[in-house]
Amino acid sequence: MNDAVKIEIDHEVKSLITYVKEYGDSLLRAEGEKELQKAIAERAETDCKVKPAQFKKAATAYYKDKVKELREDLGEQLDLLELIQDE
Image (cartoon, rainbow, N blue to C red; front, side):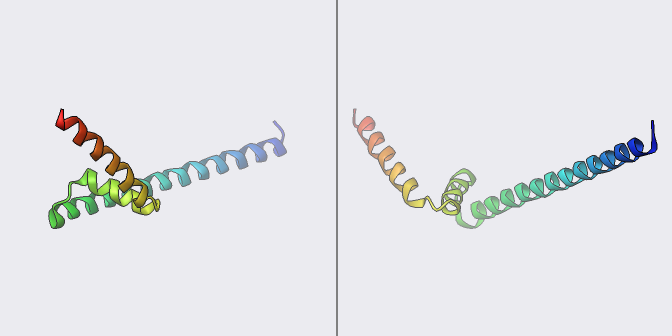
């Protein structure tokens, strides 16, 4: 193996290791964010008596600017459930 090929392979290996480390760091940050989101939902449950699943759904709708659509969908579901309940 000539020196030029060895240098190119060494560079590729170093680059790959760098990418693997960057990816691992990203996964660590994402895991930390998930833990933070869970803690926030738990505080909402403790302080405001809101179930975590309901809180997460509302917070996600707020984040995606889809609160109006969620309200409309829930209204339609409620109408349907009222029809079913009356039977």
